Image (spheres, rainbow, N blue to C red):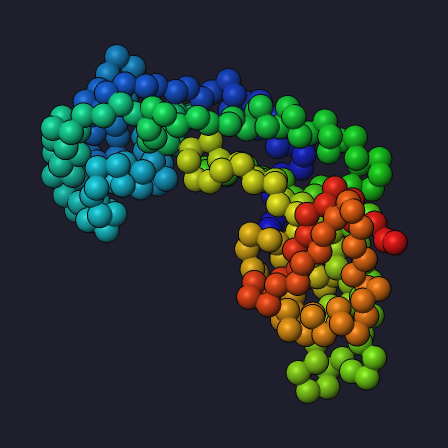
Length: 265
């Protein structure tokens, strides 16, 4: 992940977006795509641009293949508008349209129950600030067109891993993690690009920007077969207590755990 914003900049942007965004719920016939194929008129409100994510959601909702949608938008926008508006008229459904800064950013079902970034930040940021006193470090945070994320480093989860007895780093295919860094990634989408995720993860010390988590088997750690060998030869390396559980997964090729505290003993 890139550094992105500071935590203060993120809070300022979330506050700004809170005052700028608006939601509209209406029948699909109340939304009219203009002949330029890039502007949608909301009845009684006015015209809005369409983000790429909103265009994808609109195409999916109308069962229009995205490649065909993009082709018409680029080469035959009036024909695209005719397709979209006619389908909306013949197959009406209630939609929630989420707008921000003059653009439609989400085209969703009226049953969509969003968790706004402001509400999430209101719950999470005070806790992050509190634990900074215990060494928590905000490694990266950003808010994009579709998602907000915060990645924090948790130094009380760091572990030094010894090389197994009888094996030598760099000989043959031997490759070991010497240190893992505890971390957690918090992410959310207001526009249906993913649910709220709070994912414990670990980082390899020499690649501290790539998490290896329970949800995504990113190839930043050694293979689980070799990691399992480390665990068998050095069981004390992987302490387990009632407050946490560590799992070695050959299929996912990553270290996974779920624990508020990973303590030795």
